[in-house]
Length: 377
Ligand SMILES: NC(=O)c1ccc[n+]([C@@H]2O[C@H](COP(=O)([O-])OP(=O)(O)OC[C@H]3O[C@@H](n4cnc5c(N)ncnc54)[C@H](O)[C@@H]3O)[C@@H](O)[C@H]2O)c1
Ligand SMILES: [Zn+2]
Image 1 (tube, rainbow, N blue to C red):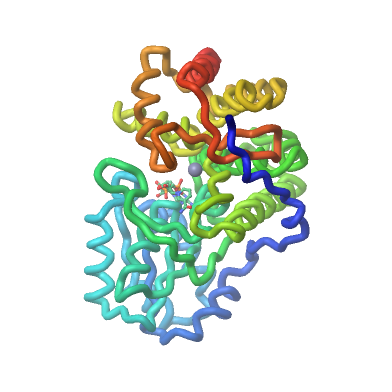
Image 2 (image 1 turned 60 degrees about the vertical axis):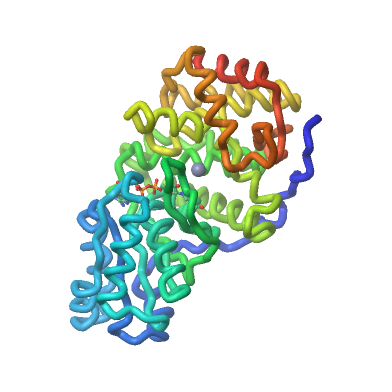
């Protein structure tokens, strides 16, 4: 029996305006006058400090010399990567804010990918019971997913995102030129969450993504492609925002955003355990292929769309490289997933494109058959 009370229509998002900006200075100029000049702080990671901070400084140079000096004095650069998304780094952030004299009248700019916005957002949300922070995401994944929706947190006890808070950023400033230095693999990782948003939203969104020539875009995009990319990002952010607005604290409908993540997180954890970590979005694509196959078995999802996603996966993300010897470990990881509400493994499956069903269940045999399918590709 598949509980399916999360069917939703995305018609409401049509016409919703996105939040991309062409002028990061104007955005900050709108927001920052509320804060004293010496109360602005910036937190980033070492890669973003190298690749994006000079651009950020030049884009905001019109604030003048005092601002430039303040940025130099008030910038904390953290080590990059998921391995540092932990309590030790949060302690560093708190020590830094305290010694630099941050107060509740301060504001912290978070410049970086999902690791920076999740972790420093959490640190800011706890510091003095919460000081405001502004997300300035620099990865595709953080633009379309991590920076919006109010989830902050860190990994703990070997498990992802175990400690955290729901605390939305004061603002989310999205400026696409930061993506120019993003490695292709990280780009594809974010693209995976856009695939997820399209599949849960509607056939129109899904076909539009399929029609976008990724190879050409990554090699040498023309103006028409840049426009289409902007439009796709805006749609993707709108889909996420629409869902989050219905259910900010993931009591019900927001769980549809976990499509692909039950199997995907298990694969991600297994790869981390083997010292072969892959970007989150790759694991999500593999997870979505298995979960679409499961949707076909359990809910009659159309087989031709499963094949469509499988071919797309092989063309852009490659195969996962697991075999039937890995079933039990993957099943055990799925059983420990924090999304389960009882002893059974919980999935978001799809009845068809645009019709997600959170809280779906499947037998171990069906899950193994879906893994078989994924591993055979
Ligand atoms: N809060 C949420 O709702 C939510 C949603 C999805 C994912 N997440 C979290 O997001 C994290 C993953 O985010 P991510 O994929 O952005 O990872 P990330 O922050 O680790 O960034 C990926 C890599 O790219 C580098 N980088 C960032 N911007 C760059 C740029 N413009 N040019 C060159 N290099 C750049 C980073 O230094 C890092 O090495 C995970 O911890 C995940 O749990 C949170
Ligand atoms: Zn994800």
